[in-house]
Length: 327
Image 1 (cartoon, helix red, strand yellow):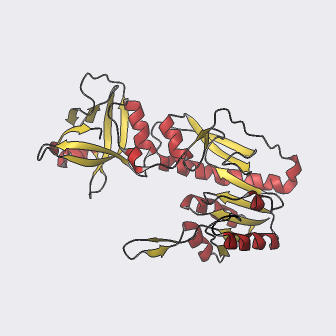
Image 2 (cartoon, one colour; image 1 turned 60 degrees about the horizontal axis):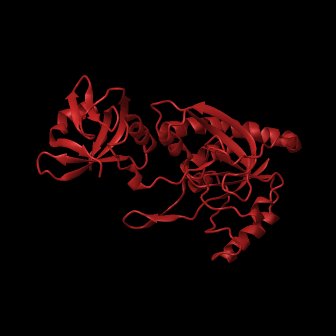
Image 3 (cartoon, one colour; image 1 turned 90 degrees about the vertical axis):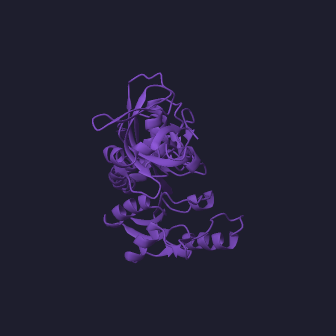
C-alpha cells in the first residue's frame, strides 16, 4: 500500500518504523517545521524527520495546512502536491497540525489516526496522562477514520489494556505503542482486503472528555488532596513535567523545590496537617500525611541533582526538610 505518513513526536516514529519495515511504500512524510532550541537556538529536527532522513523518505514541513490562513500559499502548494501524488492512505500519529477536510478527502482510503485512548473517553493531545490522573482502570488504542472534528471520526478498530497502579505516563505510553503496532498492521490488512466490509462505528459524544496538554503549573502537588489522588498525579506527570512540591528548609526556613517521581498511596489514616512528614526510616521510607490517608515517597529529586531512591534521599537530604507545603 502506498502511504503518506504525518507525524512529529518520538511516539510517531514507532509507528512509522513498523510501517516501513512491513513492506508498505512510505512515499512521503509530513512533519512539523524545525524548531530552534538550546543556547545557540540551533534548529532541531523532529524525531520523524530524523527517521525519514535516515531512510531516504521524502519530507515536507508545512507551517499550516489551512487554505484560508496566514500561510495559505504554502498550504495551497501542499494541497496541489497531495492531489498529484498517487497514494492510497494517509496515516496520522501525533502530528500536531490540523488537517482540514480538503486534505482528509484526498486519499482513496481516507486519513486514519492512531489515538491512545478508548475513544470517546479522552479526545485531544494528552490522553495518556489524563487517563492516569483521572484514575481510569483501563485505556487502549483506537484507530479512526478522520473527520473534521478533534478525534471524533468513526472507529475502525480498537483494543484495550489495563492501567496498573504503578503505571506512569512513560510505562503506559510504551505499552500502548506496542499495542498500536499490532493494531495498525492488522487494520491496514483489513482495509486492503475490502474497505467496504469494514464496520465503521460512529462515535458517541456521551462520556467524551477533552485531554489538554499538561501545563507545568498543574504539576505542583496539593497535599490537602487524598493519597490516591496525589499518587495518580505523580504517575501522570512522569516523565513530563515531573510532580513538584515545595518544602520548608530547617536551615533557612525558606521554601524550596523538590520533584517526586514515584510514590505509593497507603490506606493509613492520619490526623496530622497535610504535608507533615510522619516518619523517616529505612524500612518504611518517607511517609507524608495527605488530606486523606498517607503517601509513601519512593523516588525524589532535588534541584540540579539526579533522581534518587527514598533510601538515598534519607541518607543525604531528608534532615534539611521540615515539612512540605502545597504552594
